[in-house]
Image (tube, rainbow, N blue to C red; front, top):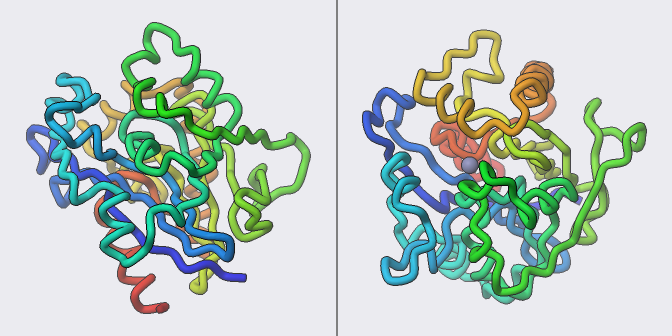
Length: 274
Ligand SMILES: [Zn+2]
C-alpha cells in the first residue's frame, strides 16, 4: 500500500554568507509526515517547541550563530501537524535518521510516540564522547523517549542493493530504515513507498543535490559542514557513491535533510500526485 507523504521544513537556517552555501541561501530541516494506516509517522523532527522558545532554548549559541538558525515556532513539526488539520496525538511513530540536535528537537512535542532508531546511533547519543557532546543534546529526549532500537542484519533482506530494516511502525515493506553510517555513528536513511513510487530520505548523508549527480559541486561551506560533522568520512563518502548510483538508476527519488531545492521538488511532486 502506497503511503501519502507531506514534506515539511521544520527549521530554517541562514548561515553567514548564505549565498555562498547554496542557490537559495538557506538550509532547511526536511521532515516527512506520513499518513499510515495505524496513525501518523514522522521522519525526523527538526527543531522543537522548547528549542524555539528563547526562555528555554536548548540550542547552543555557537550552533545558532554558525548556521543562522531561525528557531521559528511556526516551523515546528507540532505546529505544522496542527496546521494540516491533524491531531498531534495521532503521531504514533517517529523514525529518526540520527539524533543531531537539528533532527531530534521535536521529539518532546510527541512524547507518547515510539521513536525508531538505529541501535548504534542510540548507543552513541546516550554515551557521547567528548566530541559528540556538541551534536547530541540530552535535554531533547529527557521527557523519556520510547526508543525502539533497530539493526540491519548483514546479509539479510535488501532494498535496491542496500541493507534494510523492515516493518517499522507496523508498515511492513512500505517504510524501511536503510543504514547509511558516516555522518554520525548510526546514521540511517528512511525509504517510503508513495503513490508516486519510492523515495529515500537520506538524512545528512549529503547536503547538496549535486552530490548525487555525475557532476557534484557542493560549495566550500557545505564541504566544511560535512567534514566537521563526520563520524566516519570514508563510510560517508562510500555511501554517497552508492546513493549517486541509486539516484542515477531513476527508480527512487533520493533527497537529503537540508537541501531547499530538493524540498521544493518533493513538494511539487507530492502535490501533483495527490
Ligand atoms: Zn542535520
